[in-house]
Image 1: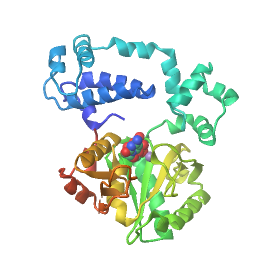
Image 2 (image 1 turned 180 degrees about the vertical axis):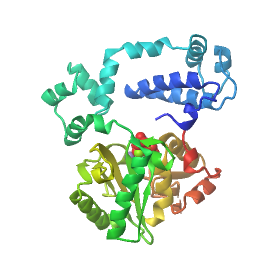
Image 3 (image 1 turned 90 degrees about the vertical axis):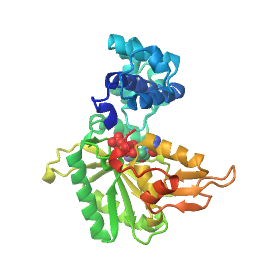
Image 4 (image 1 turned 60 degrees about the horizontal axis):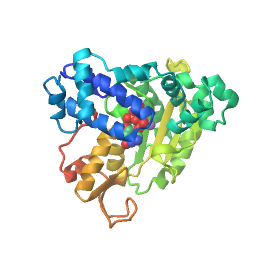
Amino acid sequence: HAGLKSQDTSNPNSRTIEILQKMLDYYIRINDQWRIMAYRKAIATLKRQDVRITTEEEAVALAGIGPSLAAKIEEIATTDKLQRLDQTTDDPSDSLLQLFLGVYGVGTRTAQQWIGKGWRTLEDLLAHAKLNQNQLIGIEYYKDLNTRIPREEMTQLGKIVTKAAKRIDSEVEVIIGGSYRRGAKDSGDVDFIITKKGTAKSTELQSFLNRLVRKLEADGFLTAKLASGGFHRNSDGSLWHGCCVLPSSLGGVGTWRRIDFLLVPESEIGGALIYFTGDDIFNRSLRLLARKKGMRLNQRGLFVRGTEGERANEGDLVEGRSERKIFEVLGVKWRPPEERWC
Ligand code: DCP
Ligand code: MG
Ligand code: MN
């Protein structure tokens, strides 16, 4: 999901950025952490330039661009392409990797193992691979779950959930976070943040979520529940992952969509809004800044950092309730969600 700025063709380095972004996507697929970091830094640096960078010398003089990336930048500027990228495009195992990574619930390691076994199609996987429940759904609804959700449909899905939620508890608030809150024209999934005035723990919203899910399942809106795992970690039941469909009465054609519910007490809504609005790179830079200032930012709020070895949120809470206040305490100018693309 390229950010607004990289799509901005008014940036004099937009073509270079576009090609480096494709290399970055490749390194993300093969999980090459070192190159992922180098490419992210270089792209961020190029986005900040207001003149076109055409030579190795110009590039290497910029902070965060090393000699090997500088040479690639010159190659792109002079030939309008990058041979290293063409190699990956021609590499059949990379297109297989892309195919298998498109299965919901599959990471680089699993995809590479499957390729190593000689499997080349989704049919091969169904016939031979040991698949978990998520992966089975990921294959059955492969096309649907890899189709972006137009903003208009996101809004409609939001209305359905909000209406059902308000009927169960009129004091509950429903906010769509993620790329939608950043103003994206389409999204990969719908991220619902569910909160209520006066709550101090997400468990206070648990029975509400159970009722909401039961109702939306009965309506045929929720079509599957997915096991959680991965980056969100959900030990306390505050997160629900699944799939939904827009009803045909609202123009839906039965396409399955990924949907997430996150329960957030009022006391933590600021931290949660920042976390679930993203983007992930923006979050990382805010967390880094917090750390530099002796604090810790996570999805529950901003904390004073405890002594070494302490687990997250064991320090004292500085601010959790207000998104704006967290920016303020960190000493950064307020950035509205639409400007949080990195
Ligand atoms: N998030 C994060 N770090 C991650 C994954 C997610 O900080 N590794 C946060 C920032 C994301 C938010 O959670 O914006 C929601 O995650 P999504 O994967 O749903 O990402 P987006 O909503 O931003 O994009 P998409 O349109 O692809 O869903
Ligand atoms: Mg999302
Ligand atoms: Mn999500």
